[in-house]
Structure formats: C-alpha cells, structure tokens
Image 1 (tube, rainbow, N blue to C red):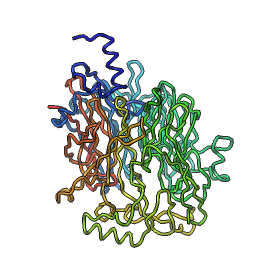
Image 2 (image 1 turned 30 degrees about the vertical axis):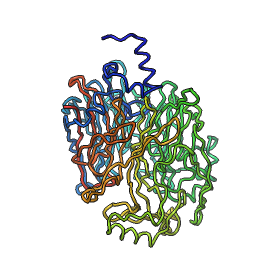
Image 3 (image 1 turned 180 degrees about the vertical axis):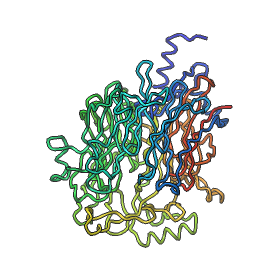
Image 4 (image 1 turned 90 degrees about the vertical axis):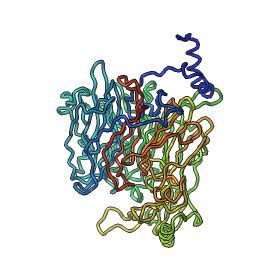
Length: 633
C-alpha cells in the first residue's frame, strides 16, 4: 500500500518529537531502507546510529553467526615484543566491507559472505616498541565512480588505496603513501609518531591526528593536519600547542610551549558537514604526570576544539582539564547531537571524558548547555609542581563513573582479593577527585584508562538518548624522583601496572566494575544505568551483576537496541534502548574490544551486525583475530 506524502511527513516528525507514539505504530508503516556504514562512527557526526530495524527487540534473541573472517594478524608478545589489540570498526559501502588489522593491513571483504576480495600489507616493522599493535579502522572517500581508502599506520605513514583493487593511488604522496613524520618528528627519529584512529574525510580533505610519545617533556608535534586527497599536498595545519602570537600561548609559562610533546589527537574526530565545523578531542601535554616544567593551564591540551574544517582556523575551544596531572586526556570522538530547549532544537556536541563527566556544548558557539562550575581542588605536594587551583565540573549530567571510595567499600566478594586489596590500602591513601598524585601511594578514581575511554558514546536521535559504557578500575600511583641526568625531576610509579586490582585483575572496590548508561540529553539526567559484563569465576558461584572492565563502544539502532561487546568476558550483548534490559547475549571466542557496526546486505536481504573479537588488549591473556558477523536465521 502506498502511503500519502502527508502521512509519511507525520511519521518523520513523530520519530523526532514523539518517539513513544512512533513505537506504537504498526511495523508496516516504517519502511526499512538499505543502509551502509561509510564512516567510523556511522556518519561524520559520530552518532553510531543505524535506521535499520530488521533486527529488533522482538527477534534479537534469534541472532546467529552469519560468517567469520580471520585476519591472521595477532600477537601475544612471544614472537614480537608488542601485543595486539583488534579494535577496528569496519566500513561497509556497496556490498564491500573494509577493515584494518592490528598490523596495519587493509582488507576488503564481500560483506555478505566474509570472503576476502583483496588485502594490502604496508609491511609494518613488527619489532619496534609500539604501545600495542592497533588500528581502529580506515576512512572511505568517494567522488563520482572513484572510491578510495585512507588509513594511517603506527610508524607514521598515510596510505591512499583504490578501494576497488586495493592498489595504491599513484598520485597521492609518493606512489600512494605520505610520510607523516616529516615536519613533525624530525628531531626525534627514535620516538613514537604514528596513527591508530581513522582519518576524517571531508570533501577532498584527508584530516589526520597522531599517536605520539608522551613520557618526556619534548617530543614529536601533536598538530592536526589536512591533506589533499588527490595529491597528498598539505592544505592546513593546526598547532595544538600555540606558538608566540597565537591564542593560548600565554597559558604556558615562559617558553614551556617550545618543543612540547603530547597535546595530540589520537582519538577519532567528528564533523558538522552542513556547517563545516571539525571537532578535535585533544590529548594531554607531555609529560602527562609531572607538569613542573609546563606551569599554566596549557591550552589546547585536554581541550575540545572546533575548527573551520576547510581552513583549520580555530572557531572556539573549551578546556576540560586544566594542567593535566592524571593522564585524563580526551579519549573519545565528540558526538554531534540535538538538545531541545524551550521548544527549540539546539545543535550540540557532547564530549565524553575519562573522569566520567559528559560535557555538552552548543556546537556552533561553544556555549555550555548545562552550568559548569570551576571548583577548588587540592594543591600538589610535589616540589616544583603547581597544580591549577580549580577544575571545571558540569552540574548536569551527573558523573557516570566512580570518582572515589571509602575504606568500607573494599571488595569482599572473594577472600583472596580482599586480603590483597587490604595490603595495598595499608600502604596507600584514599584520594579525592582531582587530587594530584603525591609522594606517597594514593588510590585515585578513575584510573588511567578512565571510566569511559575511546569507545565513546552512541546516540539515538529518536529518543535523544546518549549511551556510554564505562569501567571502574582505580589507580595506585605516587611520584618519585627521576634518575640522575633525567629530564624528569619526578615521574609516576604504580602498583600492579598502576591499577587498583588484585593479582587476578579483580578490582579492589565493591562492584559494579563496568556499566552501560543512557543519558537524557534534554534533561541532563540518567535515564538508566545497568552493570555491563561479568566475572566468570564469580558467576560460577552465583555472583552476577558485577560488571567488568571494558574497552570498546556501542551502537544503537532503530530496532530499539544498543549493541555492545567491549567487556573482558568474551560476551557480545544487546540491550533494550529505553529500559537497559539485556535482551541478547552470545559468547565470542575472544573478547570484542572494539565498537560494532551494522549494515543492510542487498544480496542477503538482511541486516548484519559485525564485531571485531581479538581479545588481548589491556585486560586479557588470550589473543584472537576474528571478525564476526551476525544475522537473523
């Protein structure tokens, strides 16, 4: 039956304004439209939302594995000095699935079957001391019938490939590759400079951030650059540490800005394509624990920065952590959302933070949409350090991660864990939020990996809910004097990799240790929060609902579902987007420390959901290489 145009317009309005009424409409009135996944976050706005609803709340329990592809790229640290983390979110365009592997290879698959179509190997030197073998995915470019794939590697190269053939684009850079280290790491030939997250493609620009070493004061530049997609010519460069005459240079005492490392953008970026605004989640300056040599607020470290995407000109910025001493850099792609205020829709940007705060700004002006207070915080006891006296705290939404504990909140679920944790507490102090690390061991929440991390958030525009996963693993840290001749007067030292857990990685405080939260953006309140994950040995004793450490992200669909793996328990789950009730769970061969994606297969006439399951990372001892696709029978 063909519906009248005015009825279709009414349905479209209801999907935004009155989602409850929409959900009450007969399913036949909502047509499933084919949908691809052409960007890391689904779209440039990083909504991680799909309008597909073939898989929905009524049938999600029937999901089965449709196909599995093994990359072959996995490292447990025995053959190579670095371990692997399969954090890729693939792209899907025109029936082809594009992914990158932990070793930086680009692969194209038939998206209906998982059959390999082509693979390109950049021949990464796997014996170099990277932090992890990691690559979160490629970026897709299209002009007419031309299709290309762009991605960066851990050793600082940017590749451009013909997406049909997997062959380098000869006109791009030197035979299809750019040396990103040139002009950025020239003075530091042995220091890390590379790329772990996908570039952002806008019109004919390939915009790329970087992973840099941040252990010493000086290091490779963390600037963001835009290159011409055809030639590789540099179009613009934004200085993340402002030089003389630039806005923010006076937030660095003396010449402490000069040669400063860190202050990079390692997480994915997002873009308001209609308004031409690029959003950067900038990392912390180096070194990330001792700031005695960089006194001041240190712009644009830990700032959300909005740029004119075509020119790289700064439009506005907001610093979320002043003079960072905790490694609480901005870890996640900013989400472009809409907020209803007094009957008016305000285009907004939401920034997830490691601290568990969610900051919400007018995406055009940078004006906060909920009040933010500058609250006094403790001073630093470390000689030569001057912690900034206040830190910004949003009054709404409430924090979604643990930010402290009392002695009574020690983990008593396991006697061995309790004994180990009490031993740690006998030799450490319990700190408060934004307490600088001192000369004695202090327990601080969140930990260095934060509550939320690079998985970020997904956004349902019909419900105006933001979904964020988080974990509660604290840190145990103190500052010690640097070695003789070191450029660091003080450096951080931790217990058990700096994490507040026992020898079996069980957190030392009461659960939950991982959560999934839905945030009502109109009200700035939590719609629901549920534990995310379990611990096998505790579940065997009937102890569930603990949650678990997690790295990865979620997506949300018009089928009323939030899909997420992320946890270190090898599970892949689907939750009811309005209530948080778990509707489906399956066990993977390896934990899925990645963000899933979904698309419509024209060949199969089915919606597929795909997750990278590689285990390893920071929380697992088992390593895999599986890309797994699920569909209805």
